[in-house]
Length: 174
Image 1 (cartoon, rainbow, N blue to C red):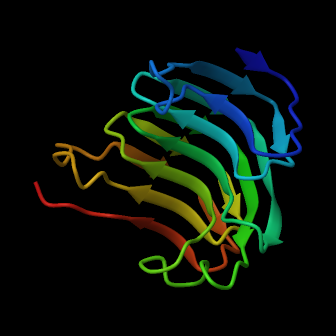
Image 2: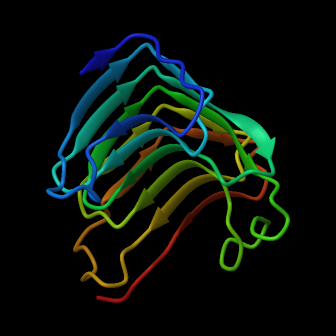
């Protein structure tokens, strides 16, 4: 799939693959020079083993501080991999008082880029990540063995004005 301009009003903007489907769905995305905004929960979601995305020169914009839920600009998980190049991700902030807040260990935070439960390569290069609760969050799957090398690599990326944290990676012992 190749998209040039995308605007969504609710839910997930782009869903690439689906680890919850039976059977699991695998997707591949090439997205360049595009905008994704107006989503409810996730801007771009790459999900499931074998699913991949190359996202280049994209602008992914959340609705800003909201009491509805914790949005994520770009989410890669459950075995999926992605390359994020020269993109801008912003405006993902959660103000739901009973669930969201500054402590990422006990409270939810909206992420610019969320990576979880994957050993597939995820790279973020030359991008701008700003005005999110947390810029980049990499959460390991505690039920799986630790990878032998880092699978998420962030390089030459600027993090500015993220409300609580620039980034966090959960760790697990091998």
